[in-house]
Image 1 (cartoon, rainbow, N blue to C red):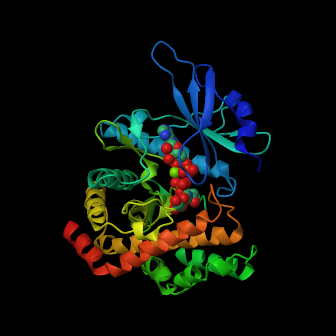
Image 2: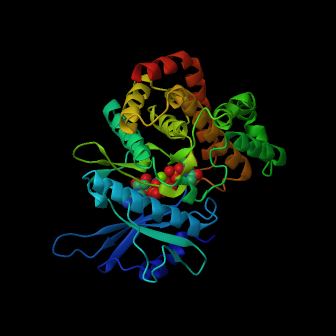
Image 3: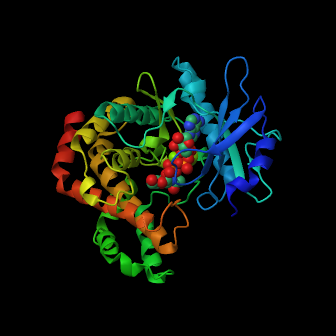
Length: 369
Ligand code: ADP
Ligand code: GN1
Ligand code: MG
């Protein structure tokens, strides 16, 4: 698909931003969508900003279903937040419909675009600068799950089938290795073997689901630190964003994906693996706060399985980066060659750290019950 910039002026004309638009520039550090911030001409009070996104055609095949999910979930969250005395305009995303009244706009090149008001006076962090900050994000994700506890899960479309099906992710990696379309497998034999050695792990959570030990819930499924906006004054979580993958899933995966991304002090694509280490203090801070945010909504089995959520989300994400590297970087945005392989390597390092500290992770979870 052509660069998103090619369609910007057409798309900007399709929405009513309430004032003339003075510009739109690329924004954020997401790996999936093309995100822009739109600035409008200041009125008496200020310049209003909006987030304009082209949904990734590689990730999302059915933008209509995706947007139906998001409108359903954001309306519901808004009502719940109001019921609890919150400010829905800051604490829940709100979809701004295009002039044609549809939930999103389709450009001449078939790209699907949506708009949200920009949630102001917030910060989007890429690394957990302190245990208190990371804990605040954990409370916010725990609360998100509690707020959606009674959401009618059956009404949600599966926006990416088998998204956190780790068995399927391993199968896809094996297929990419077998095809080796770009002759890259020779550069990543150790990483491929790392994943194959953990084949049995890939079934642990899925088997617990099949056995009825873990319940299916409405989950976010992409709980990176940069998918929660933090209040720039109080440091507390304000608004959970990136709702593209809200679907039925496992609570332990929402916990685990946050740990994968945030419980360390390095970038996801760090090339010096000596800098990539699981931080147990951050793990403990997040665990306590996440459980606090859920307000007792998790079953004892879900709490027991939290360390598995952390390990499996990290392992799975490593497999996904490796698969994309082998397939030619067609899914995750990259800004340099080899970046997806570097991302895979940090995930392997974190999995190894989790394995080396397995008993400690379990003890921390037990102490947070
Ligand atoms: P991706 O799926 O590509 O990660 P996101 O929906 O997470 O896309 O958006 C990318 C970035 O844009 C976020 O990390 C955040 O910095 C910013 N962002 C998204 N929505 C908003 C919003 N409503 N207000 C302020 N910033 C936002
Ligand atoms: C993507 O959209 P973003 O950048 O928040 C991906 C996640 C991965 C993550 C790795 C829809 O998240 O699943 O864990 O990159 N999102 C999708 O950083 O595939
Ligand atoms: Mg994101």
